[in-house]
Structure formats: structure tokens, C-alpha cells
Amino acid sequence: MEDSNRSWYFAERPDGEPDADSFELREEPVPDPDAGDLLVRVGYLSVDPYMRGRMRDTESYAEPWDVGDVLKGGIVGEVVESKSEQYDAGDFVTGQGTWSEYSVVDADDVAPVDPEVADLPAYLGVLGMPGRTAYFGLLDVGEPKPGDTVVVSGAAGAVGSVVGQIAKLNGCYVVGFAGSDEKTQWLTDDLGFDAAINYKDTDDYGAALDDVAPEGVDVYFDNVGGPITDAVFTKLNLDARVAVCGQIAHYNDEDVPTGPRKLPLLIAPRAKVQGLLVGDYATRFGTASEQLAQWVANGEIAHRETVVDGLENAPDAFLGLFSGDNIGKQVVRVAE
Image 1 (cartoon, rainbow, N blue to C red):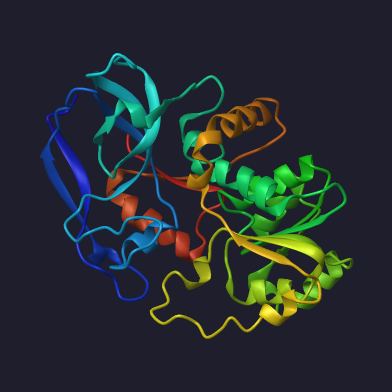
Image 2 (cartoon, rainbow, N blue to C red; image 1 turned 180 degrees about the horizontal axis):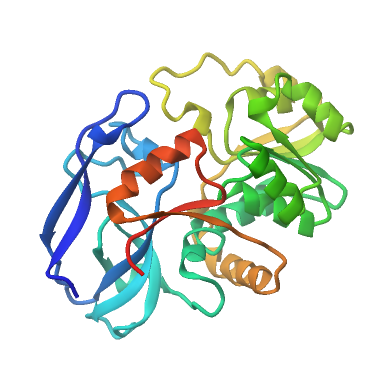
């Protein structure tokens, strides 16, 4: 174990899109775990779009960071020192930690990891929070039925890519929006989506939907917001369900966009629009994790991680989320 520990701290609140000035890398002694804690050598660190909201000085579902705080996020790594009877040194765990080389976590707040089921980064994606978000968001909020047309925005991301595959397992016709030909090809060729639309090369999203989903939309899983969502709202079928998971198109907006102007489009189809937070399903995480692990082990759900090497590059990995650099889950490899 090293004698020092590098960690990223929140340096200043950004105006609009964050940049390098929001982050400060510090070197400190390796922390000592207290009773009930684990000292984890971080193997992989998760960066996620919701973290942009934690940079604002406003209350939200995720507690805002104070300037000067160490940055926090999902981690997976190896226990190097245990002050708990639940885990031993050498065990692998995943949970909420810090953007650090070594992170102290409460043993009650982590879960064990089985490297035989999947590589470690998968526990920050398909077998972690994004996978559970897709599971509950689609099945509980979207309520897909065989034969439904399901449209997913941000479909090549960590959540959307799993949503589409679960929809296919439930007998649905699935269309995904993504931001490059490489991503749309991955969706159709590797993940089994029936169609995919490159929104960066499409001038008329409504017309594109008419081409690939001429019978309308029964379930819309929204990770993005903006003009894609505006277009999908014009195609909703009777009793359509809309699951609002994220709005990354607006995360860096300083002014709230005018609206909502599209609500009249929900009246005739009697569509249901519901926001979702995965934390609301915490008592059922075990069920979701077991099913997701089974699907992955059986090859019924594929996954992909975009890996950025080095803790020093964690801010770049986070900022890359807003330009669509990642395919699948964006993670940072801190240590082998």
C-alpha cells in the first residue's frame, strides 16, 4: 500500500458547463478506517451526469457538494484493511466512495463483488446503479408489454443501453437515439435494437421516428430531454408511458427553458409521464441485481464500458459525458 493518497476536491462552482477550474487534485496521507469501516484501494471510479446537479448550490435529490469537499461517486475496488467482521482484506466491494486512490467506506454501505460474473467495471454500470435504474425505470414506470414500441433517448449510454435490451427481452420493438454512427451501429448490431437514429445527422426527429416507428410510441424512456423529447411527444400512442430518468440536454443550462409547452400533446393519448429515482427502489435492489447478473452471465444482456486511465484524468472523463465521448458506461481506471 502506498504512503500517500491522491484525491479530487470540488474547487469552485461552474457557470454553465464545468471545466478544469472546478477540480483540484490534492495529495494527502492514506486515511485510517474506524470501527465498522473498510479501507478500499479504488480500482475503478464512476463518473455520472447526475453529478452536475451536485455542483449547484441548490437542494435536489442528490445533496449538493460544498466548495472544498472531496468529490464522491461510485467505486469498485479491493479491501486492503478491514475494521469490520463483514469483509476481509482481499475482498472486492462496490459502493459510494471518493474520487481517490484509497477510500474509506462503511462496511454496511457496500456490496460484495464477484469477478467471476463480470469484470470489475461492470459493477459500476450494468450490475450497478445504471443497470438498476434501467430495470426499475422500464419495468415499473414504463410497464412494457409484448408488441409495444419503446423509444430510448441517450440509448448508447450506461442506462439507455440496458433499457433497450430489457425491452427486447420483454418482446418489444425498440428504437434508440444516439449521437454517432458508431453508437447506432452498436445498438442495432450488438444489442439487438430494431432501429437507431443518429440525432446529430438528423434534421427532423419526428420524420425519422415515422420512418422507423410508423405505429407510434407506447413507451418512451427519456435520458436527454430537449428537442428529441419534443418530437417523441408528438408520436405517443393511447395510454403511452413516459419514464423521465434524466435531462442531460439541460444540465448545464443556467436559465430554466421556457415551458412545458408540450403538455397538450399528452391529453388525447392520455399519456402518463413519471419521473424516477432509483433510490426509491432500494428495498428491491437485491432482486434487480440478481436478475441483471443472470442476464449478463447468460449473454442475454451485453455491456460496454468506456475506460479512461488514471485518477488524474477523472475530470476529463466527467466532462466527456456532456460531449458524448462515452459508449456505454464511463469509468476511470484508478488502479489495476
